[in-house]
Image 1 (tube, rainbow, N blue to C red):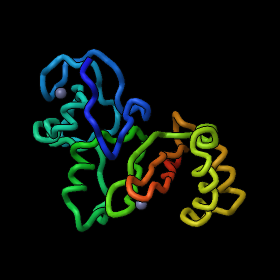
Image 2: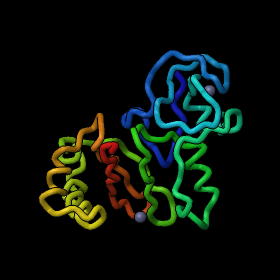
Image 3: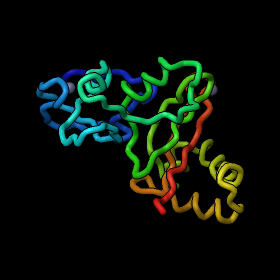
Image 4: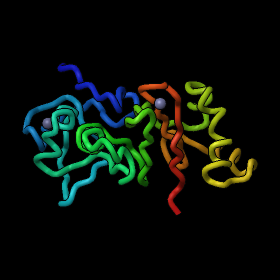
Length: 182
Ligand SMILES: [Zn+2]
Ligand SMILES: [Zn+2]
């Protein structure tokens, strides 16, 4: 089995669930591969093929199909389009039902760790867990009671859920909350 490529802004795509072990023939490189990408994918034409992690890493999927794996906020990284390209075109995206902001810190995209619910935040990201309710009060304008109710409703496998990021520079953690679709 060939080692997976390295993605600095998405260092553990197996743990996050965006890449899974599977026997596929990749639509971009036409090779038999042992992993498949299952995260978000943006492409103009209908696309029902399968993409391997190596074709994300080396840009083949982007060049062949015009595919991106995340759509960055146009204001993100205004000064550094190379980083925006790396994030959109050569980094596995996350799995979500609606678009999730990919936060930046220290002038670069933060590293995406994994989706998390209330239980996973408390067990694996205790520092971040204590920041979620104040964040929802400040950024989403929720009352303390509503913020606390939403925090307790978070589930890893469906919205509402948290997507956990960490800065590669200062290491500060950050939760992006994916709300339920209206
Ligand atoms: Zn491929
Ligand atoms: Zn930072």
